Length: 392
Ligand code: FAD
Image 1: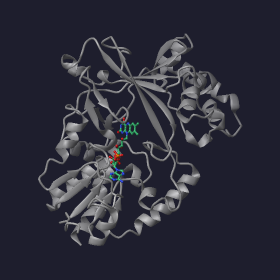
Image 2: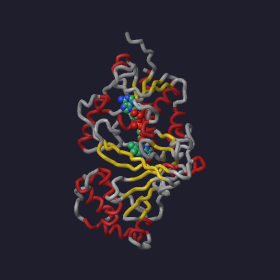
Image 3: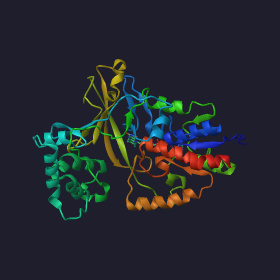
Image 4: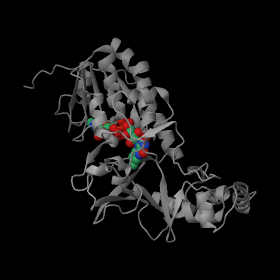
């Protein structure tokens, strides 16, 4: 005989930023009891990080995460749980044996053309080079790139990087993947243009642990919503009428009945060096085809303020290899072809018809969200969907 389960008021599937935000709001605003389950052995979803004992680096387990936002509601909300360092994100790229600043700016252009163009001269040059395909409607990503920034800069900084990201020659990729390629005609190489940016002072995981430091919130890890042998499974919760916030893959929820949504994933290869600093920056892109990875992350360099607790003689770097995801891989970036969008629209209709389940987050809505977007959508989903469901 199975033991009778005393169900909480709300079950949240997925301990990522969407699920944690909704759980925090439900406990705080209505005082309800919330159970969060996650199939992984840690909270935080893809924003999770851990401290590397050997080097003292904070490793972002699912790829480099930089917090930035211009949304005051989100900034005020996250500052309740963490303070932020004054880290400002800047990226560099290695091309043909030289290191350039990104996004492409006047510094990149002048270094690349061995020139000292003024902003107006550089603008005129890029416009002239971008005119190579004037009058032609670009039919693929390669032509689109050339028509946006001209062949020399496109071929140096975009072509091979994009080819590696998609494992496909840009001539065989649709033009619609890119709408614009940012070029700055000044020396500003600050990557984000948002009002606020920084990294959580005590790390991502400490931030997210504080979000759910509430006796009304309980977390059960290594628990799959679709595993019928655990009490918080889909069928049991539906039978008991317990409201659910689901942040797993939407197609999985419906047992892939309409087909599978497609994603790209990233494989990480860890390399350790006998030196305190290998790149001199946190993110180095590799723009050429002869290096098989797209970029490398040197985690120590995200947190120079922790230098005293970091190993001065060792550093850890993760090389990133991008590819199409298969079932069982970590789904990272929605591919979003027209077929994917149409398929998601059909799943969205099914999701809307589920009476007691709210779908959210990047997997539940098949969207790429930055962290600030996901927190914003979670705050809105709580107000507009979850709270009304809990008050019913
Ligand atoms: P997730 O974090 O994916 O959480 C979903 C959770 O649901 C997971 O923990 C998963 O294990 C769990 N789950 C799924 N299925 C089940 C199931 N059946 N049962 C139980 N649990 C389940 N954002 C930024 O703002 N800045 C960045 O620099 C940045 N860099 C990124 C780099 C990469 C490589 C990627 C992929 C994303 C990046 N993001 C960045 C985006 C950021 O990761 C997301 O916005 C955020 O993690 C989304 O939170 P979420 O709760 O929607 O999803």
